[in-house]
Image 1 (cartoon, rainbow, N blue to C red):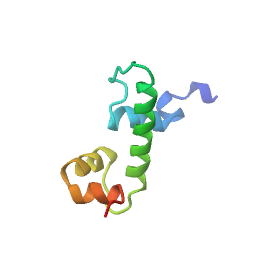
Image 2: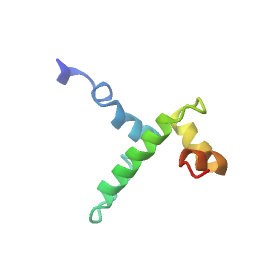
Image 3: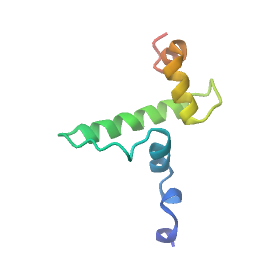
Image 4: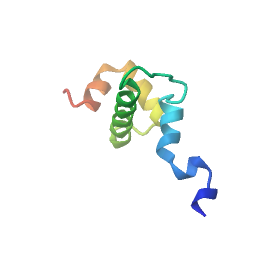
Length: 79
């Protein structure tokens, strides 16, 4: 029965990586770069999901971290 479910329901992490972090359009293939980028994306996704300080979607949190140095430092625990 599980195989009849759409892939979105079987692996929601993959769907979030595709939509929020644009994983599928990236065609990185040099050496271990693809695996390293995948690991980095999963770390970023975990950091953004664990943040309870701001209630926004993952793409909006990602944009907020891009634009707001204080928010980015708080996410990375640099302050």
